[in-house]
Length: 272
Image 1 (cartoon, rainbow, N blue to C red):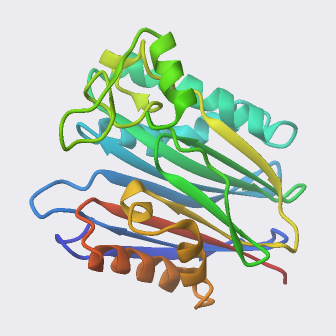
Image 2 (image 1 turned 30 degrees about the vertical axis):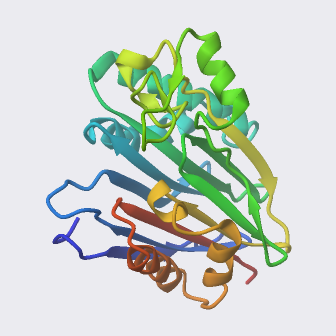
């Protein structure tokens, strides 16, 4: 991460994958003096001779130790599950749970939300998974389609799950709903002291990429607290350059007075 207030941006593209995957990312630190809590992954790997693209945003809390482990290990664990081609959704789900167990064994404090996407060259499949309040939005035929699930106590099913596990949901005056008075999300990696009450089981979407799928946007809560889903899609449609698209979203979120860390990855699907 560069100097405080300076956005870090970059991008890349696949070589053999059809449709071609072209991506851009942008991350911006929040309040001055506070360490950057968002980490990301954007990379291509060759697995059994085929390209697989991995993308992820990890929004940490109470330190970045958990997010660093996710950045280093989560996609390795997905690959090592062995089902990237036969059952990529199942491999992703199992790897999330395995990674959380490893984190709990090695990390005493802190946690992280996650939103990830895996694009498999074989079959043109897009696997999106998430924990917490980071978000994934697919542009399909020009319209925003939410393909992640928000895990917070405002959703009745999430609140019920917390209470079934012995936790409670409270709201202090002027604050948002929190699990056990502490955590604003109901699912996350880590958070060892609260693990009896929160889950690391992700919601997973398995999508076939066709001509109606134009691009995917991954964003931290800092981004999506400032925009609705269609606003994000409409902004990205203004440019063919995914790096520029990610940067303009992040910078606009800051102009709208977001004080949180802001992270965005734009993944475009292009026929060549």
